Image 1: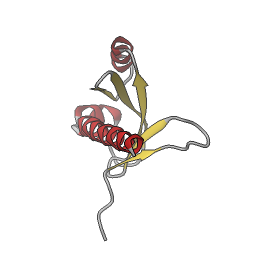
Image 2: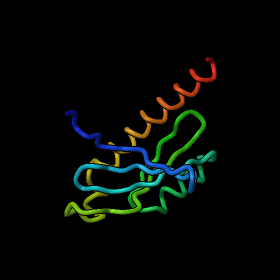
Image 3: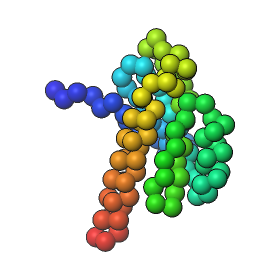
Length: 109
């Protein structure tokens, strides 16, 4: 049996178009993904949102912000000081690039 993934994309298209990242290992948390077209808006949102990280992919900007911390014995400050937010952002970058490539391939088909 394979190991469970560290990060998962979560969405419920029936209810909302919002997307989330679930961190499945300790400390468990749920982060929401906020897309922006304007860099200044994304940077401002990031600077005013605790426990968030920011990436740019081509001409789109994304902020991933932790919305809920679950069990795991870590507080918000410790999470902010850890490397997890950076790992989450790099994972999101990989996911979004892979998703964009897959969509482009479907359009060509």
